[in-house]
Length: 162
Image (cartoon, rainbow, N blue to C red):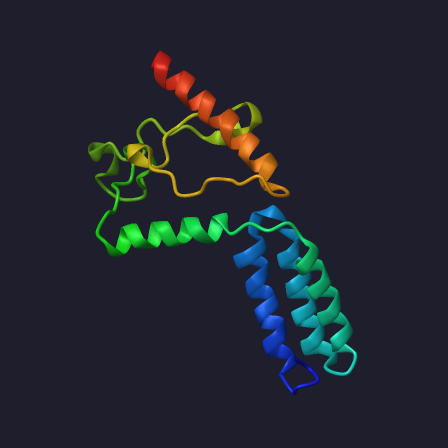
């Protein structure tokens, strides 16, 4: 692309996009590498900037891939566009206005950092809707495991009514 005359900044921008769109949470470091290459190209220009672009390109090409967060965003955007919006749960509603207490806003909110593992089984998205489902590539394996533990905790608490 460089040999054909493509602007190195365009190439760098495409790498930054690919880092989130194609690699995503499977390897979040890809975004850092791509963004660093973009800054380096801006800072030093060509011909040396081609080395930074090559570095980022090889890193991203060999990274595990996942578009799950991008797909989740698309699904959420579709729901909004089609009018399938959800009410904010009462415990997540703002309390910084007159009458909030009377309306029950913020009632029952549990601060996650006050609990073991900084997690509290509390509904943040009503109706059990899920947009993001972790995959099995790279770091998403660990994210999937963590989400499964949290979902079990949520189900256990919901079953006991605590």
